[in-house]
Image (cartoon, rainbow, N blue to C red; front, side):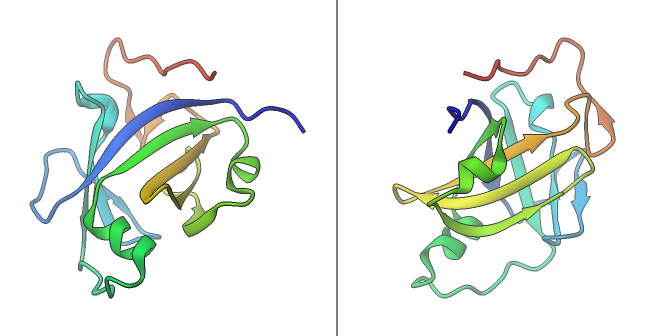
Length: 134
């Protein structure tokens, strides 16, 4: 099996406050901001209605209430093998597939991009460059 290549993409932070430049994600009924437009690569996630998830459903509860770390990967299916899947895989915005897992008590998002030229139809900010896959 080939070695999975990955790179840091963003930090996602749940919020209940509307943010400038939000895009709608139909699959998960949330608005998200473009982490490529934030100097620290932060994505704000605002649910239409915050799900009432019991705390004992650790992965889903953390997904809606705690930040997540997102990594770009070259093979999403390989990245998900043996992991505790929380949500996905799904295509949130026409640029590739994503999935969320629970690992080491943290929510991790793996993203396999088909197209790095935009984020939910928005062009990348001037000078934005993806981290190289390692």
